[in-house]
Length: 284
Length: 129
Image (cartoon, rainbow over all chains, first blue to last red; front, side, top):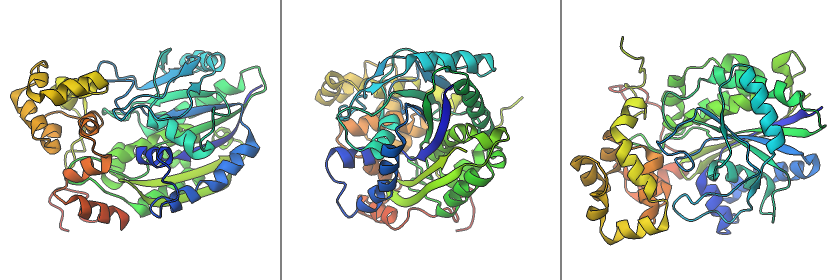
């Protein structure tokens, strides 16, 4: 049977992708950020996951205002890096895992989560920046990826609680898939940032670190945090952090198993307008 | 019954909800069209003519022409859509975000390097700083 080996959490700031693509990672501004991912890149090389279930949000790229799915699972064989207005990032295309994705869709929808099934989708920096941070600049990504897009652009976005419970349902689905795949689940976006209005530039280091503490030790109570707390404390775009609760909900301790092991924790301000957080939890 | 919108008392912040999305539909879809290189070229060649192809309000068109992102947001624009205008202009996200704060580009960048805008005094409208 397939099983979840670890959950990985990271911000997906577009400027980080640009820094990588333009060869600026050695600049003093960016150096401390990329240093925070050195361990993780090494760890990924050792872990060799078979599939990554990658939770991210689309930033008005694949989904305009024509359609706004709350939860969308990518079931295609491949996904092209999108042109977000600056031209597509020079990164490999993303190879999907249609068979596992279809299995998860079947299971999770029967478990009362109404997913939108997406057979054609370009993927933006929300998905490709995390891949670059964890895998560097390879010719091809090392394993298939199932993109899972969450609406965090138009309110109301799904609650933290809903996301947490969904993660649990995704775990159940993966554990009933018959091939013995080693699956990682990634939650991306955040941490504190606000990109709009006179309050743009908001960063809340204290709140972010408390969020990381609670995500590790007490995700159940964290999942009950209302949206307004994210907005007020972590900025209007800090709401992306609800996506981290999907990945956390898929760890075994949520279902009565052992607590995960913290393999890596990193926090850095700033990347452009944003606080960058990164965490690796190994499932036990 | 009125809807629960607990986010209207956060200073300097507009939450893009279903009501704002309704107001800004054509403005945001115009922005979306700028993801195609040919449309970016047509927009740059004659902004007014390109905007007139969209059923946007005159106020929305003026806000776009003036690159007044705060005004665009008040009229239903969403920052991720508005970012396509910035991309067309060759602006970074930091330049766009900074433009809404009343700070110079340099001052905004410096604030971010020093750890960003503090939440203290920025949680509630009318709160004492």
